[in-house]
Length: 116
Image (cartoon, rainbow, N blue to C red):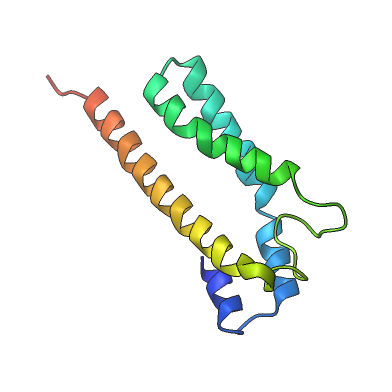
């Protein structure tokens, strides 16, 4: 969010912004896919079903990068067709999702540790 905000305010150029963001796309896809599979294996159905659409969206977004682009975030296209706003909106939605998951996981952890 901060990097996209810096690009929006012209504190950073598009090429360096996109290279910073693209280096985190593959670890995000792998990490989210691993968490989703682990929830399936451990039979946490609600959390699995909550994570499945986000993991699917991350994989779809990574696979559908047009050939010739630098990655999911491309410096030549980030200012075209409102992509910057859509990337910013997607980042905010992901932030909300990860905050929700953090507190759900924290609640489950605390509820499993019962002092009685």
